Length: 387
Image 1 (cartoon, rainbow, N blue to C red):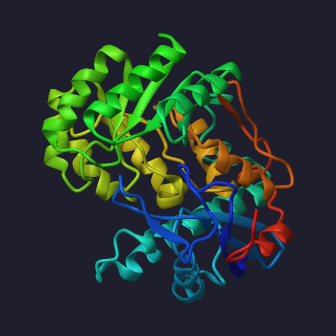
Image 2 (cartoon, one colour):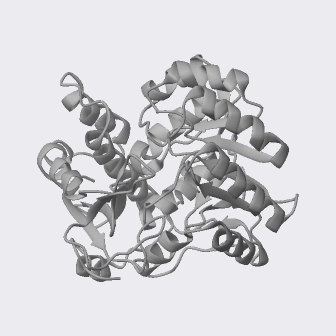
Image 3 (spheres, rainbow, N blue to C red):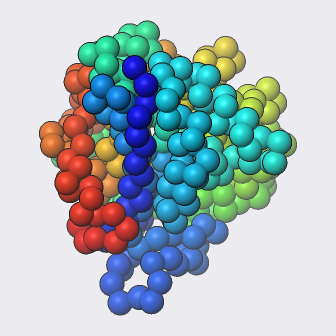
């Protein structure tokens, strides 16, 4: 059996509300900069799906986390990877991963879009192998440690503290009792937000904070000291991601666990964080690592007694399903991220929706990733449709 065809679908879907809140209409550009954060954001939901077909008609789907310009992923796969993949066995995924990585390694492309594109192909190959063998991916990875996957509600995308508290309470009433606040607005304002949500939810709720790389070591240490009495479970992305020494220093000072990793894509990038004791919880994103590399990272983390909380932001069906499959199969899972608005859009592209209820993802039991893509709907949304 050989790979016979590869097709990419760069998607730009207009949601009702921009990611992390905000308007989606009446603007000249899809892209904008939020004043409180460094990153460029899209007003649309952007991603890139890849479909790999064999000469016997089996199909596997993958996805790269591509929150901006997803067409870059498609170009890389179509022009650099397709000539390598066509005619190869889908079961040679390890060899193919190495060859795709090596293809641009000596030119310095050991992170970024090149690796994201590899992740999309890797996920598709795992889906394909599962479809051929008629097994879910978690079985191919060695079995499941858990039947359902614990998760936390991420973001609380409301413009002020009362609205965030109200939204958190609504989710708590639905059986969710773990939340992450997307803040980084300043030490005092962050503390005020966490205190308000804690008072709303009570002492039994798990609360985490994402600081979006906005602080210095001194500021982050001050914030962590204030968060500890409020029972915060982890402080995510407190410093610039390049500052490994700063993370090591902060971790030594902080009474709150330090979580990092959404910016990293390979075991080589996670290695210094692990070896230098610069983090407590690692947060690789399967849409940037792929399934194979995610398992390598989780294994490295386990050897150093670290937990893994897979990052999951704007990835749609294949990303979410792959994250669930991996989360079921790793022993050192902390919790998986849950983005309700993104989840709803993802399900619109699936024939049977994924399920997340009462604070847990349900494990899809179909072959491969366990999902069936609505290809007709996907084609309607290629580069610019409205959801």
